[in-house]
Image (cartoon, rainbow, N blue to C red; front, side):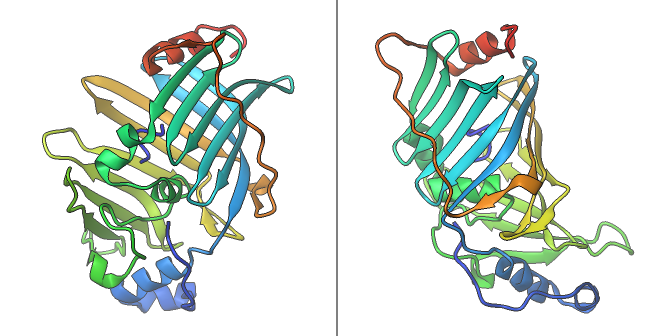
Amino acid sequence: MVALFSACGSHCVTTLTPDQLATASVEERFDAMVSSYKPWHSLSVPVKVELRSPSRLSLSGRAYMVKDSLVHISMRVLGFEVACMHVTRDSVYCVDKVHRLAVVEGIDRLCSNADITLGQLQSLLIGRAIIPGQHDNLTRKSHNVVLKSADNDSDTWSVTATSSGRYPFTCVYDVDPVVNQVSSVTVALPGRNPMAVSYLSPVECQLGYFPSILSCDVTLSSKRIDASLRYTTGSLRIDNVDIPSFSRPGSNYRIIKATDLVKSLSSSSLF
C-alpha cells in the first residue's frame, strides 16, 4: 500500500456552499477544494487493512502520522501488537512480530525515485491532491484544471498534474462535485499500466474532509493487487497525539521480501 499510495500548505480562502458550487467555475471549485485542506501536525485514526489479491489478509489497528516525518500503522489482536508498519524520511519497516519476520527498505526506493516526499505520501493517504515532482503548494498555475464532460448532467471535473522529475508521470484527480473533494486518482507512468486509487465516503472533520475508504485494484508486474484501507473517521484524533514507540527489528528477526511477509501474515491463524 505504501508503494502504491506514494504536504499541502494551509490556505485562507472561504469554502463554497452547495448552492455556490452549483454555479461556480472550475477555477473557483479548485480554489475551494485546496482551501479546505486544514493544517495539521499529527493525527491518529483506527484503520482496517484488507488485501483480497494476490493473497487474502485482514488486519485492524490504528494509523499514526506526524506531518512530513512519520507514518506508523500498528496492528493488534486481543490488545497485543502482532504487526506494524513504520515509515520515516529514511526507511520503511514492515514487521511481523509473531513470526519474527521483517521487511526493511530505504525510502528512496519508494518515494525519491518517483520524486514524492513522505509529506506528499501522507497527503495521498488522507485524500488530498499533490503536485508530482514539485514541492510547493497547490495553485492554479501548478495544474492544468479542466471540467470533465462525462454527460450533460455531470459537473464532475478533474485536476491533471504532470511530473517533470527523473521518472515523468501524470496524476489525474477526479473530483466529487457534491463535496468538492478528490474521489479518485489515476497515476500513469510511461510504459506501465495506470494505477488508480478511489477515495470513498468522505466525512467532514477537523481536517476538512477525510475519506472513510481508500480502495485500489491494479496490476503491477502482471500481478493483480486488490486492497483497501478503511478508516474509522469517527475516532479520528488531530494533534497532541501520543505516538507509539518503535524498536527496529534486531538480530532475532529474519529480513525477508515484502511478498514473503504477505504470505506469512495471510497464512497465520492469528490474522
